[in-house]
Structures are given as C-alpha cells and as structure tokens.
Image (spheres, helix red, strand yellow):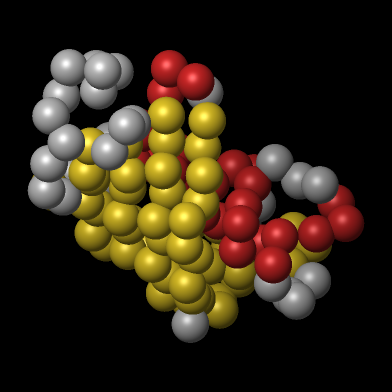
Length: 112
C-alpha cells in the first residue's frame, strides 16, 4: 500500500548530493522564481541540509541557499547555464514527490 514497501516514518537526513534531493531543490527554485517579483531568475547554489520522510511518496525538507543569476525571466533560460550574480537568499523548501505517479508538489517555499 505504501508504494515502495517503506514504512512511513520520521524525517531522516539525506545526502545533499542525492539526485532526488537535488531535483526537489530545483522544484522549490521554480516555485520561488514563479512567485518572486525579481526580474532575474534565481537558482540553487548550495543545499545546506536535507531531510526526507516517507509519506505516500517522499517528502523532502530542504534548507537551500539560492543565488540570483544573470538570466532574466523573459529569456526562458535553462537554469543550468545561468551564471550567478552576488545576491543570495536562504530558503526552506518542502517538496512532496510521488515517483510512481510522476507527481511533484511544492508544499512550502520560504525565502529571505
């Protein structure tokens, strides 16, 4: 019933370099960019803490440093090719993924 046979449990630490963690961080960044008034796109520069919890899929809880890039929003750039400017923000993202349904939901994206 739980999909991948893992019991729902408490959040546990994850390696920030884990591909799932990095993907979740990028979804948080997309959400931030969609709701920010900045004309430039931001992207993740560092994942400082990553936790994951099994809840009908995986819920990622991430502390992420994001940086303003030189790419403006109108350009529809591929974020991977955007260089950083100086300005940085710290964010907390909660991202819920259901891999077998290919669903991703950003529950929370708080940046300051």
